[in-house]
Image (cartoon, rainbow over the protein chains, first blue to last red):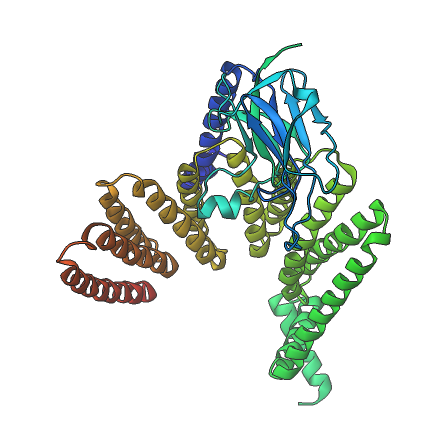
Length: 192
Length: 308
């Protein structure tokens, strides 16, 4: 064994280098994770894969409250197929991810904005970062290069996370991939 | 000389040189195969036939996939891989069929991971594809490298190291190693492997790993240095150093990669610092001379490597 190590010192050093780096960065990440407080603020988001900005139904934030907005689709626009959004509120303390009931709007109704009753007592912040420093994002791969593309595996589960410190500390919201999930706001107050 | 005299002579020679019956048989089979290899049409038809059989089996599997249960899915994907691997090991031990071992190991290296992923998908809970890939590639690296330790076949080393890299790369990604550092360290690691292998009888795979390692190291080094305006000139000694190394280790593949890297860098540098000045056309001319000079030097170095 000793003779093999002596004969193949270059190979041993070459194989040890990435292993040592891995151990160092793994330890650093774990320490950073342990020293970062858990997220506290609930987050509201829309998760339909077919939801888009030109949909007849939109979830909007106005005066710190969440509304369902409806703009009747133009008749000549045959491609416009209104889809009711799926609105969720995720509580990182309990891990609950609740879908919110939306008010009914009859077909042919006029343009309107309705306060969502279930969230009427909530107050939201539209800031991208929560008051405790977390952000809502997809589990995208961090920026890579040729080597990470070849050997890093193109890691993309499509889950939505609350993350901090460049993704080193993150809480998974939902493992079901929502490729078009859109952030609405942080719940900064709940009046009962 | 009549037949009996010839046989007597063969017996005398076999005793004299300690030749076994198996070795004589293998030589006769190999010679007959060699004779047939001149017929390129037969070889071509053989490859085409093989491709059709594999393609047909794959298509049939895809068509009936929905009707198969979990166990059948694992058997149909992992089973042929395992059989190919075992056959590969058997053929290595029989010199009459040892040429078949490499294609069999190639087939095993594709089907075994496929079968293992199918197994994990069918029986394991969770959705962590990265962890699954680390486990699969890790197990296969052990399997191939341990078999290599016993049989000393180059193809086993090639695939075993490739699986090792797949597993190690994913572990590094999971440990949040920054991408540039990731590429530089993994590139260097692959280069040291190629350098070591190049001095053994398995040197036929060294060129591939020199290419991957050199490309990864230089690419990642540039990505790191590029972010710091002013010190990006430091990339030039790195790339030239790689050219010198390629001559030292007598690798034309590494020379090719490092030469293209220097040429690409010179293009980047002139574009970055001289594109908007009046001296740009002159810079282009200078760059042209540099390109010609470097190409000529690279060709000379390549020739010296060939001679060496």
